[in-house]
Image (cartoon, rainbow, N blue to C red; front, side, top):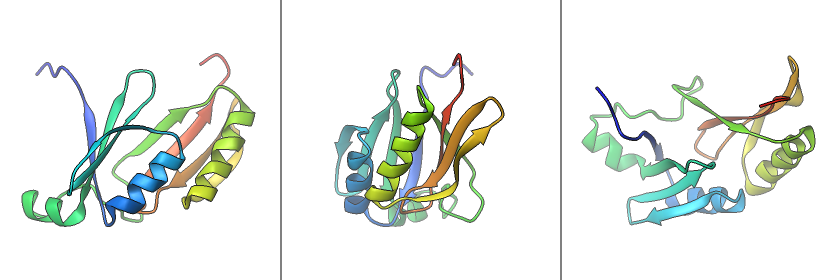
Length: 130
C-alpha cells in the first residue's frame, strides 16, 4: 500500500456548532455541505472532515470513530512557545471547548489537552527544538 495522502473523518452531532468552534480557533475552512464541514490544519494542510453522525451511522454501520470517554485518536498540534499554548487554551475555552489537562509542564515541553463540543480530543504541545 502506498497512499498519496491521509485525512481524518470524524462524526459530529451539529455541523453549525462544529463550524463555529473550529472557525473561532482559526482553522482554515476547506468546504462544507449539508452533511459535512471540513478544515485544513498546519503547514501541510492536514484535512479534518466532520460528518453528521447520522450519515456515518448509516454508511459505516455505526463503526465511525466517535466521541467516547476514551478516544481512538488524539490529534497533536504544535505550538512555538509556552505562551502560545496558554493562548490556545484560552481560545478553546472561549470557543466552547473543554480542557482535560494542563496547561502545564510535560517532560521538557509544555502542553494542554482539549476536547471539541463533540468530544474529539487534541493535544497542543510546545517542545523546545521542535
